Image (cartoon, rainbow, N blue to C red; front, side, top):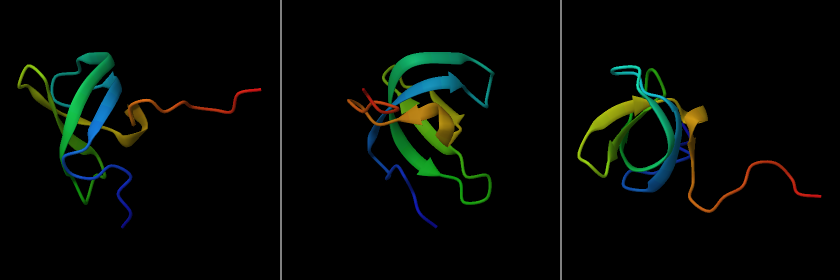
Length: 69
């Protein structure tokens, strides 16, 4: 299957984590791996904590959503 984010790439997290339900808002992280069954990503934050995040809650740095008019 197609991976939008490769292992080791940097991402910005805007959403809820699966481990403890913590809400992340514009937090930088690094992709560790992708679960092939549930299709979510295991990410590591700068402080060393790790969490599972859904792909809809991730985006690449310096990217915009939508179209500017």
